Length: 139
Image: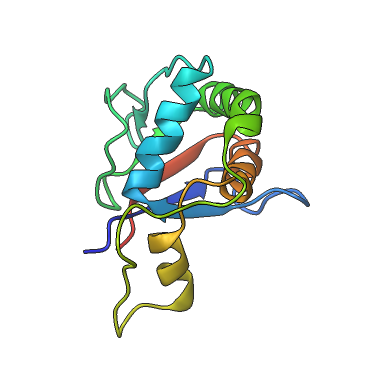
């Protein structure tokens, strides 16, 4: 298992300049949360995709039982990351050896190995500006 978190916009196809999907390594997912908190994001917490009831944490689950970040939470998280942007390194240094495998597609290799950088944070902000999104482990 490569520990990639996959996020998909609830709204489907995005407006020009926005993203419908975003993928990153679990350590990056946790790092983006921590960075947001340091710059004023107070997480509302995700909800169950089916019931809409709070589920408490941002730990990914399997597809079919995915969690959803609501629009207000995504917007506030993006706002916090915009405030943090100047403190984010322009280039990420990975703290671990590269992850790859014979069956991994190129986009999986990139998602598994990319660290937190201004480019990644900028892409994640653009993704969250599209509104609510589901997240789960990439299968």
